[in-house]
Image (tube, rainbow, N blue to C red):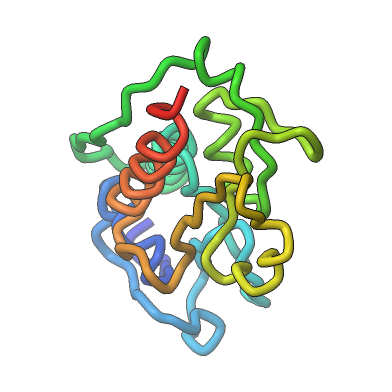
Amino acid sequence: MSSMRIVTTPMCDRILELAGITDYIVSSNPDKINGDVVVTLSETLTSSKSIKIKLNTFSQIDESIKKLSEIFKTTPLKYKMNKVEYSKNNNEKIKIKVYSNFLREIVEDMGFTIVQENFDYIVYPDYMKDKILGEIKDNVRAVEVPSHKNVPVDPIKRAEMRYNILEKSLCTKH
């Protein structure tokens, strides 16, 4: 398999490394690189043959590392994620209105109840703030979560940061 040219984006770089893959090219525009396969986030559009991975939740990160090591027949490296401790039983009582798919996956993973009306909190990505300002009224608690621009490139640090923001903002209030 060593002759295969694997290309990935900066956001997925660390996952290939953790999957035990050592020979790959990192590019912000993988379609410009003549590779055999591109490993990219599931929402990234590419015209190249690609392997799509999800890196929003802790379990998605684990699954992506396992998936890549199986595909490329590598041995994953040992790694540690500082998973946020929270009580899903308590969380399911808290009703959240969520904007964006990546946040929905994290909020669901943490066990919160997702609703469209009669919510306790709004959770939204930083890039949507202007669009939802009208919904953020004085009595509504809104939690802004950094999207792609204001987060660590390392997906584990990124997930830890987002879970911590949600845990501190949502779990400790009830």
